[in-house]
Length: 454
Length: 162
Image (cartoon, rainbow over all chains, first blue to last red; front, side, top):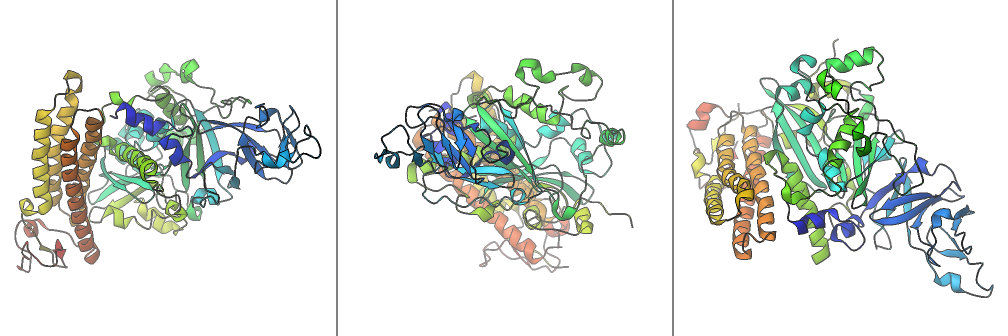
């Protein structure tokens, strides 16, 4: 439960808002690199932190991100001509380079120096790991990019999907571990699981206990359930400032992924999922169910039980990128017969769409004065408090929020692990939670309570 | 097997427990004075529950089999404190608590958080010193196998000495 004022502070991200100012302290993902596939390719409309921006790739391959309105008379630069090393407004021919400098002003007399006095609003961009990052803050020299391991691996895959709701309610879905055992796996019974794997423990005890802690990068939780007589099954997940999560499915020792919930504006969010192959190439599936294995043997296209999320073709609209076919207008293609048949807890086409439908169903900006949070929501509570307090500290005292100048604090992993009951969960996993580390397969298997047959 | 020596054999002698108990009482008084109306009765219920449950979490952690499991009790207590902290923020900003009263509760809450964090730190230190050891129930409720219990006023300030 939040007061109206605190909820506003948490959710509003436009220019001049406390949370908007906080977000602008960081580099944030603006687009997938392949959305600007080639030099001089068509400009792209990008809605980001409540601003209308135009992304474009110039002849040399550099990426620019500029305010939509031409500084001359406000025409949209989306219609601009992507010419040698710059974007030219088609209204009067003014041309801007990626830094926003006006490099040509053919409508003014030749002897005029006016072009040197005019600048377009432009934000610096860096391309890394298939993501175009931008810095929308005020520093002349931007801070370093965060050391997010998956984004530094050339083999990483980047997926995006737009969500019709505020970034915070979308993000909160990722740090709400209990929902996995209900929303996504509520239809499974113990008979559907393999004894001794992670899913088995989750279904056996759907409501875990928690240990939540503030960290230098944000917040971290460990949710634990009894595994075997002397062990617990732990799921670790992270929130990292300002809008990243690392979710707990998979194996802590090898997981290399993170998710960004980038606010397009107060009511729309662009999700970036970035996943690299498992560390050391060690592939294990500690959460597979018997149903998934049946699907896989059948060669089912159901992505081993996770379902299919069909996408619409992108349009050039501000909200036209990365849209799923299933949305509120068609009840997310809900199929209640699947529920009757016991194939799904929700009847929705995929795990991704289950999250999409549920968080969008809360409204564009969830009114948190009406909710009833309990102890299983502590990670959400602590994350909100951290964000609110960091935004207030920036606004009131000019305090730089966590992680801005500490790129190394982003070297984190999330996932599951089996731990003896006699060890300190935080210390015992200190190394496992570190990114950029590889372990031998035998060791990885031990961390999930398995041994490879000789 | 390494020997554990308890600073406080009795959980009720722990500073953290005593502060948790006092905070629980304070919270109870705060709730008694609150008038939130019927639609927010649940919030009073939650807060009234959170105080004693936070205190009980410390107790239960203290009585678990493994030393490491002490941390579960502390974590759980901190979880309840986070919940209380969050709802206090709401009560303050929604005008249900005066600034003065909210500051008082807030100050005591921070003290307790610090105390619990310090306790967790001492447990962790002890675990680092003797990673494989565990607390047997006989040790828990009586003297250590060596019979030399360290007093509460142990100058080291450590919870356990290995």
